[in-house]
Image 1: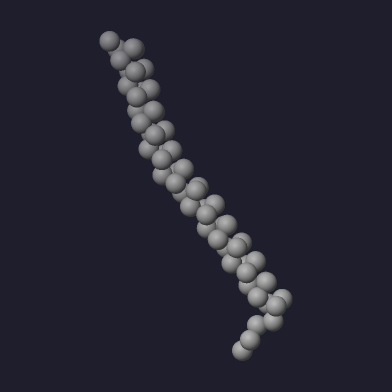
Image 2: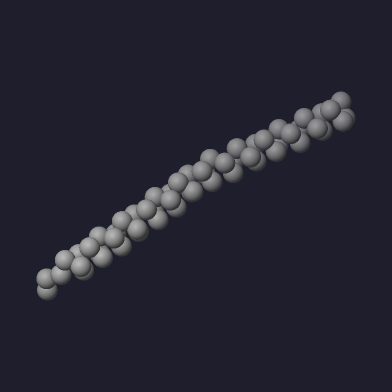
Length: 56
């Protein structure tokens, strides 16, 4: 079954859109993977500093 030129273009556009979507999701996951532990560490350091300042 041969595809027409229009069908080939449509399939190509769909593939490009899916690729762009996957790249965007990957970027978001990468940022979240780095940012969540970083923010947790900043919170722990801040809480420790506040604790030390108040009680020591």
